Image 1 (cartoon, rainbow, N blue to C red):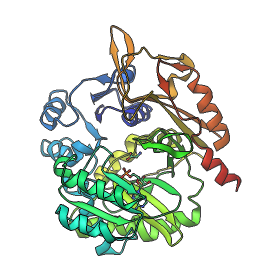
Image 2: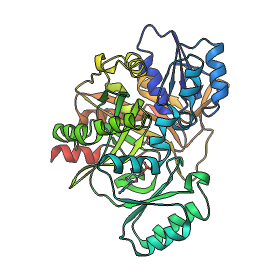
Image 3: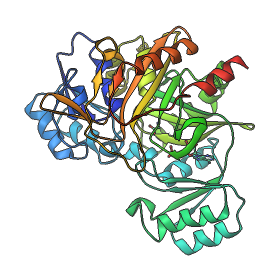
Image 4: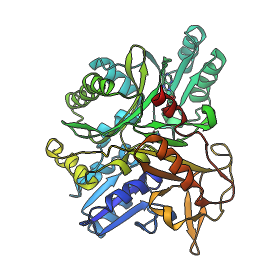
Length: 422
Ligand code: AMP
Ligand code: GLY
């Protein structure tokens, strides 16, 4: 069986490594992929946003199943385009992907169906938005409507910051069309939890919970990044809270999407804040998280391909989705200076004994040498019986990987451990 995976980061590498466990899968192609995946997949270099080229590739290579892992191709209708030529694909169609690609859509959906989230206002012109932030309660959160490479959200702790954020999106148009409309919403407080789930449009099966570490530096300081590390499961996410989320957030979302004529198939990602008034949705993503996937999939006991195919076929209710009891930790090794400014082109060495647990993101192969080629270079994961052991092992594994200018946080999982120890 031949599979293609659309995307090119650490998340895609983790997906590819999981898919490879299925003996029926004989070939995996990555579009574009990156040089660090070359031992696990055929790296094609075909752009993740080039839907036409993807369809052509799939037909020419007689692909049996496609996995669309990245947000932009989903929003651009990659799943629709492949389906139109008879190739089944994992992920939502463009209409359902709007749950991530338009914050206005997702906020209105939650309001209409009574799904708990922050109070909000929508603006489509700068003067009204500026008028509003001059008098609103502070802190406040300003969000660009569309996809903005994870940079469209400003948590403004002062009124000046809020005004800046509105001007940035609506006057300077830094996010292009994505910032033509903005959502200004209530500031929520509490521990954050990421819950990825599989859905076939009717049934939803959550994966093990996780915790991202978004800030660049230790103690959650420094600028926001794509994610500097993750742990799973998230100790704040108790069985009681999981049950509440299933009842008040997860199933209502699946049902709301059905009622809107946009049944969601694929991986639905819930970014949650556990506030004192209960769990609330901060954001939906229509895909696996990065670097959440790098801790969630290594804990998956069931076969990933079987589950993915079940979401496409609508048979998830009859499909087993089981996770191991242990814990996982992923430490992201980045280029020093990320996310602002950094150098690339340094040779990466990865110890043979840790290769299986390294997920490569920003790297390229040149004359047989693997070189750094991005901000987040790779993630090093460890799975152990408990969180403490997983964290220790992940940092031990980090010592087996080296490249010049490497930077990583030293405190991934520290807050989670503290919560566990009460
Ligand atoms: P995003 O870039 O969409 O992943 O969001 C970045 C971060 O902004 C989230 O992980 C939260 O920490 C924070 N955030 C988003 N919305 C809110 C909110 N309403 N209240 C407080 N923090 C928020
Ligand atoms: N780690 C957050 C995300 O994938 O959006």
